[in-house]
Length: 348
Ligand SMILES: [Fe+2]
Image (cartoon, rainbow, N blue to C red):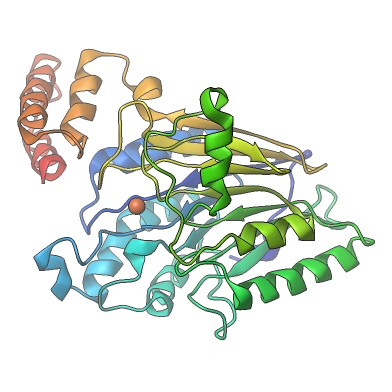
């Protein structure tokens, strides 16, 4: 799939951001069930995955010995489903993607094999992998109307990546009659300034901030400042903090967190979900979080199922919910051995 295929349709370009699946080779079933329901409903033009694409290899003894095979199976568990949708997918890397036996460039080689993948490895001289941009053409196909920046925010977005960003941004600007091309940033970590932005917003914060904002330790604030000066970035979208979903304006750039979109690691009932963004051709945009529990759990059975999957809860609570879920399945005639298998994977 070529990145040149990205364009506005009737003046709108739609993005689904998912983040922090942070799961193993057998992904929790409910993750992609919800994600694909959203893909079907929102029909995005692109899906952006903002890192922590796999379980940390430092977390579990067993995973330390698993290399390419484990990681390929992990990525297969969601990318093959995205492949069926035919929608372009771009990925970036998070802090849990940098450990283990495969480098980020080797992991990128796995992603590259999926036909829907529009990520690029980026310049080898730049720190990390998948520092790239995706220009989006206007509805009439005549000019670049919008641009997506993807960064590897591990170890900060520092001088080498920022030099590339300014150079490429200037090239886009020159081709756009001297006007900056409206752009959005997608990466794993929040920028340092998000701490101050959330603090200043206080009770007026739009969305949840259930845990401390946690930028990469190497981020001393330069990325945000350089982007502000460059004048093309309207918003930065990121993940990393699994139970934060705020979107806060700060000095002219919106800073927006997406919570975990999966059940591989900790999340919360009111925050687990994904982010939907609609961009207009004039560079304005709207965004909302789609919260899974609120949207999909309208009955006792689906609530029990969600609880059973909720990684952050006490195991006794989850086991009790699993029993309830099984009973609901028996009552409504949907019980089979597959339900037992699902429960085993959910509680694993
Ligand atoms: Fe994460």
